[in-house]
Amino acid sequence: MPVYVGTIAPTQPSQTPAVVPRRPVDPGRPEAVWIAPDGTQWQLTSDAELHFTLDAVTGWGAAPINIVADPHPRGGTRVRHIQPQARTITWPLRVRADTHTELVHGWRDLARAFTQTRRLGPGRLRVMRPDGDAREIPAYYQAGFDGEPGQGHTYDTAVLSLYCEDPYWRAVAPMSTPYGYGGTPVSYLSPYLTVSPSSVLGVTTANNPGDVEAWPQWVIVGPATGVVATNHTTGEAFTLTATLTAGQTATITTDPPTVRGPAGQNWTGNLNWPGARLWGLQPGLNDVEFSVAGAAAGTSITLSYVPRYETA
Image (cartoon, rainbow, N blue to C red):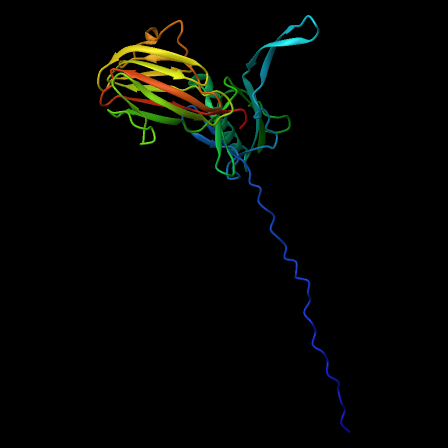
């Protein structure tokens, strides 16, 4: 006898979409390199090295300052002067190896890379961010290669103390702007500012993207008989009176303040003392002006500077 089976309604698909687990966003991490005075580079944050940085770095924030204040008759004090101070960066490194001999060799090589600053001058600690930004600071080794109690067999820890006489971090590459002779003055947008034989080179804007003052260098190529440089933003200026023949070069630096002639001779006395001010560039836009006397074909001025920052 036949058996009748009812129709089964098809199952409706779920209206709730499946939850697909998302990969966590990689936050990235900073990388650090020590550039020793002899030019060798030492990766401080690479897992492929015998040494790596521990998560206890300090001293790479805003520059320390000293405040000089005078008592005020009505109570409290009044700030008279604020002076940036040298900074000390603490950078702990763990050195580990498979054997004691390998540890000793790695420890000695790393120590040599830092301690040579006593003889060769400062090295550079460079910090690079995941977005490609990089800043560095000159530093001297001060202490830290003492080792830790209970270590020293196949691993040991160096808690480095790095002394930075200038507390501000710097851009890795300088910024520079060329100014060249063009005969008839034209707009600086086409493509450079121009100088005419005895007139103003022009007023332009120098942008300092840093957090603090940047101290520039000028390289002047003759012919020229005098240069007047003015920063209208700060109201400071200086005049250099000296003769440069075609192709001769004078260099003016502001940190430290020096003027060198074509043969390296000291031309500091050729400035208009006591009124000369070898000015710096304030953070942001600076309206600067150059005048060159005796300019002709081949005359040029290159303004270069390294932006400085409060933090790494």
